[in-house]
Length: 145
Ligand code: RB5
Image (tube, rainbow, N blue to C red; front, side):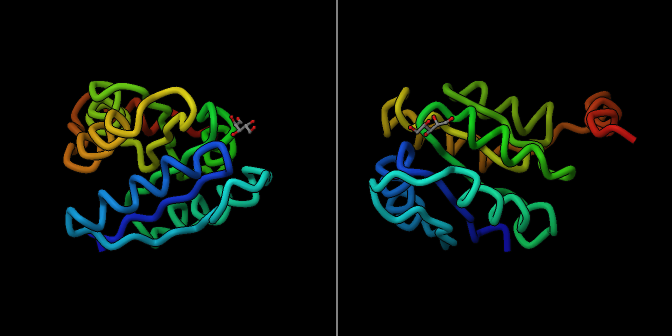
């Protein structure tokens, strides 16, 4: 299951999603593509809530979402209580999102970084484990009771 990567975006993240889907497939991952499927303007919650719900429900352990800035996508995904979506724009942030925050969704800003960098971030994110330890109790405190 860990080798199936779900991915979703709005029109602002569409071009980068297409690039990442190809890179992921080349690398041997299966991809579950939640759309959007063109540059036509759409509302990001319509595409982000379905993938976030599947992460919430444990269908997939890790996912990737994109919009133009990354902010709208991340805000939407984080409305799901078991989702921890991290907005990352460099490789170190991609690693830290896993090591320290156990982020289960990587959020990328499709209009603000180059595709090649996005792919480096994705690889770092997908291959880095949560460190646990002192970070576990912090992550456990994120949700309001
Ligand atoms: C779409 O124009 C843009 O607002 C969206 O992709 C995203 O940046 C929202 O946060």
